[in-house]
Length: 137
Image 1 (cartoon, rainbow, N blue to C red):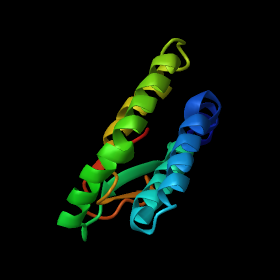
Image 2 (image 1 turned 90 degrees about the horizontal axis):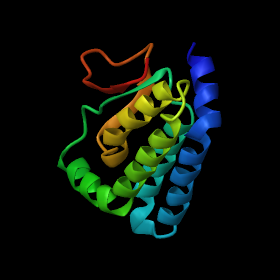
Image 3 (image 1 turned 30 degrees about the vertical axis):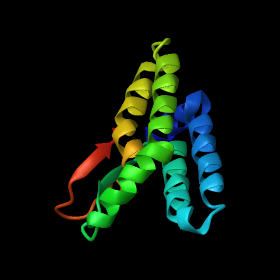
Image 4 (image 1 turned 135 degrees about the vertical axis):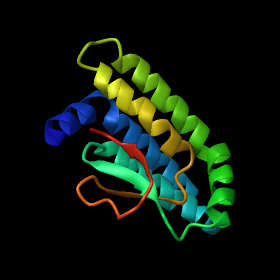
């Protein structure tokens, strides 16, 4: 079922969201100081490309640095990508088939806004005792 949902997701918005993340990642990798933000954008782009069957959990070793990085990320890219998710969800919600995709889009917004301190793992193997932020079923 995850394969079917991922293919439908890819066709009806996932590809465009992923391309947006990849474009932001390329721009952020131009300067050495913003490379960690570019890597986060690439990671989120891969997640936006194929989200079903994966979940977002806390990284246990994340500290106060991830909080600072999340604030900077929100200003640089998080807010803008969240608006992209909202626009895509609005278009997807027009059809009955797109409603589950629109809900998935809305569920991705918190992770889009604050990606640092989180890890993307398979839903089959979440770490023991990890707090799950996002799970697409």
